[in-house]
Image 1 (cartoon, rainbow, N blue to C red):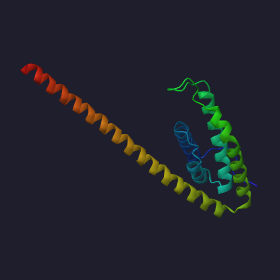
Image 2 (tube, rainbow, N blue to C red):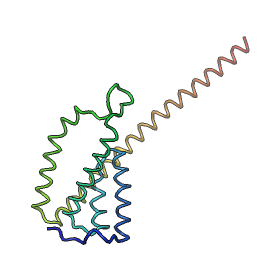
Image 3 (tube, rainbow, N blue to C red):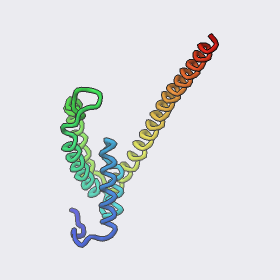
Length: 171
């Protein structure tokens, strides 16, 4: 069972942790991520929860954050298609696997000791961080190549227009 301090009075570190959690959840929501990999250690540090209880609190925070995002975007239109931003077809495909993953995660949280869960979460955070960084670098490289091609084409067009104007003056 979870034995923890009462809600009131708030300590300064808890107020700071709450503000940090709100900021992290907002950034995570805007980027389309859950933020659990960052929230679990934050809850452990700021609120002095153990790993299992921090994971439970993180799930609830992400749940309410996702509900808020859904409510705000329920009628938002896609910028390129005549559809809503929320793709309900993808949701119906992902929900069974998401529910299964939640079920397995809940079982692991009950069965495994805190230390092992902490190690698993740290490894998972490292691996996901590595792949996210790699994807960001790849995306930035591709965008820079596209921008360079556009810039080169614009310069070539300017050069051609300048040559044509010179030829028209000479003629």
